[in-house]
Length: 105
Figure 1 (cartoon, helix red, strand yellow):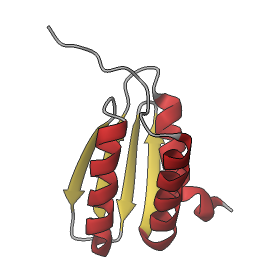
Figure 2 (tube, one colour):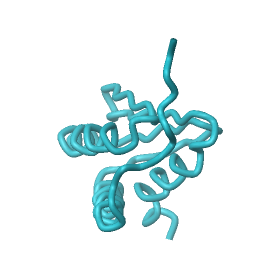
Figure 3 (cartoon, one colour):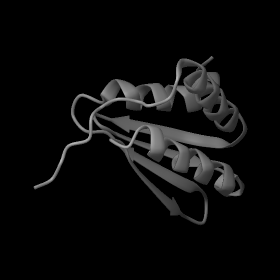
Figure 4 (tube, helix red, strand yellow):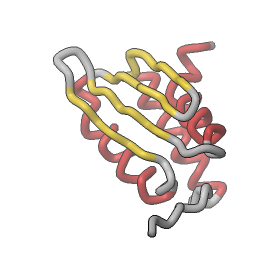
């Protein structure tokens, strides 16, 4: 029987602020585009950002285990697909916003 993971981030408030700042800095430097749908996001980064994206995905996989992360290398970009179960859409939106907030300003 499959066990559903709770929709809860395990970071402290300070840890969350730090992580969102990391995402924002990476997005500012390497985000090419983002697309969102209900429960799914696709972020495209400069291929040179692979190590930093890997680190954030590994960290987010620990604190937000309810989210799904998949990385795909393409010739033009590193694509990060993030999926969220029903009820976790606000968390997904916060992550996408963190990566792309400076692009909107």
